Image 1 (cartoon, rainbow over the protein chains, first blue to last red):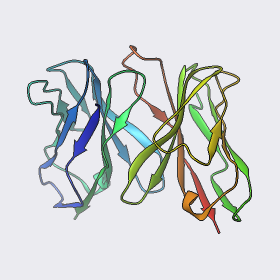
Image 2: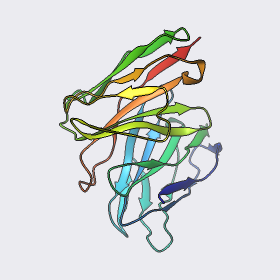
Image 3: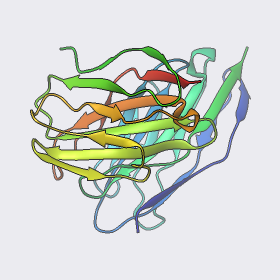
Length: 110
Length: 114
């Protein structure tokens, strides 16, 4: 079946620290992969996406590479800011439906 | 563009009442869906639709009805509200399968059932 496994949170980092949030998936076929971000009281916003193996999605300093051999799509950022505090969701789309991880809460402290 | 618009933003219901959560999108998206978000549970799919006149159940459909009479609108009906339906509800839409299109979310409806 299709599923997403995401790193458990919460994650607390100091400002300017390096961030990695792990995401692995199980899917049939060749899914598209996504990272979403949710700020408090808001809906989910697309952060970045990758549609085929070895694609790198990037946005606002965040990056993730579609690794088919390890079925992974880890989210990274070299230097986090307080404004990056949010919940991050990994998702895949193998067909019409989307499958989401459970979300990882990130808090960045000054 | 307005994107995905959900109304109302907040709602309080008494047990047994019924109501409809509205969702509209102006992006001509074929795919529309409803999720509920509960603490520690992530997002759970309630119902989805791949086009006008076509709906299907997701992971947690019990207690909810949907219809899709137009491409733009996808209302979610609570038939007889229960405290277990207290949650934040998100409507989301996308282009059809094969378009590699992401899901676009509304801002949510926070529902409390007392």
